[in-house]
Length: 53
Image (cartoon, rainbow, N blue to C red):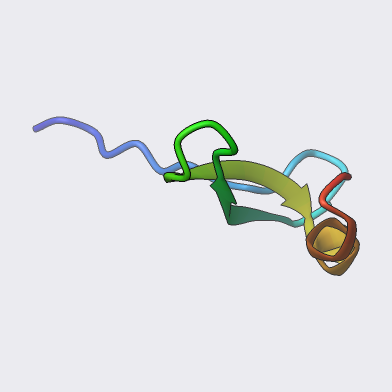
């Protein structure tokens, strides 16, 4: 029987992480693409507001 691999989003320092998915509109084609970032939970609101970590 195979072992199940479980991914965790916690580091040794104990900081929790969140995956933030943002829709970005291309200036060239007008199509939307999605950018995924791993951001510390305490920085999510700052990332959403400014677009940078």
